[in-house]
Image (cartoon, rainbow, N blue to C red; front, side, top):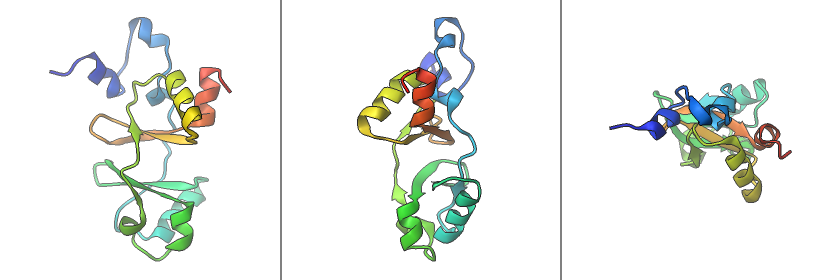
Length: 139
């Protein structure tokens, strides 16, 4: 039976003492460009760059995260399908995680951003480290 952690991990409203602590699900950017396995790398690049992003999250029909494309893949394989060149299985984090905790973790690991997904792996958004540090007051 699902409990409180599942409730929060699904990005549902919270109350009590935890309500005042910002979570990554609340502050992650939702406008992340996505692409599919059979899309062309160059098309994914063009779509992402058109809206100011330097990466594209690869998702299936249910928006489950499968991989990610970054600039390295864009420049070396523009005519290829996304599937064989994407970075498989990127790390994802659940929306109930406190921003401060993840800001510190991102800083220590040198991560510039993290993907935020529901417990079943559906893309919710992306959190930039600069945003996390600003919100956590550690910038």
